[in-house]
Image 1 (cartoon, rainbow, N blue to C red):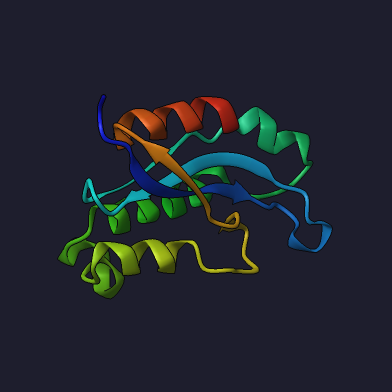
Image 2: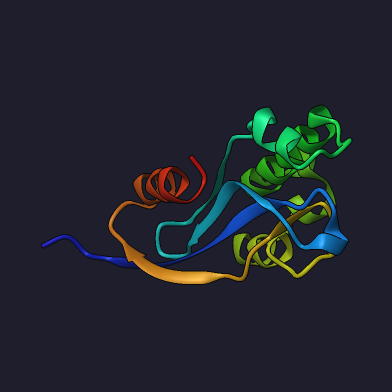
Length: 127
């Protein structure tokens, strides 16, 4: 039997009007310490965004999502946050915010393969 590892994840949400608290799930951030894994999967569907009758530019939201991906990858290209250890980067990305792009509460689970689990969660919660 393959070993299962604890992982944590949060759903990335776009909240076009923060005061209305309506949101669209656009991605998932997953962290698994044992597998030394931190990654994000996202997809912004413009037709969903338009349904909120908002004036947000999809390119601006995509830029924010790409910044999350850089921070997950880590390194100097991701700025000061990208140079933190993996756990700290995950905690920073999932911290509570009152912004248009934000993360849900963190949820735990067990997985065998973190990448496979990320793709499964993306399929179930976003697509």
